[in-house]
Image 1: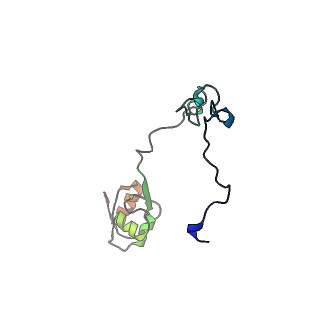
Image 2: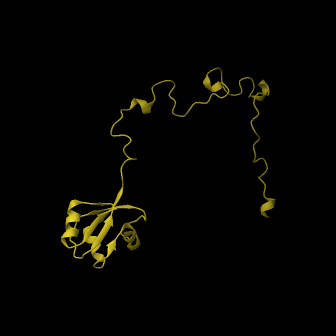
Image 3: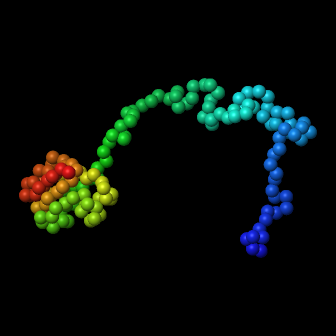
Length: 148
């Protein structure tokens, strides 16, 4: 048997239901739609969540919490001061260099440096934000900080 020889088994295919072909067909007159009402009319479909005019569940429940804030929030990739120790002395660190090393996941991510841990190397750091403690630790070792 080949693909072009495939066909359904005998009596496996059922024909289209032809309604409105007389009472003796079983699907005459109202054609299986019943009498009157929205579902009997042409184009009379109602959504699955419709509750027959009762106040919908979504509108009955109380609304809680802030709205429309998520689109304003800026997501930062966080880097601690202690992770900057893997770079050599005098290195200039940018978000691109952090991405190349694998510290930051996205290439175009906004980066914030936090002050956890100690820094032993003198570095120049160019990122989007610094915490106060991180800025103090980088500058106390003799490094430079610059906000992009």
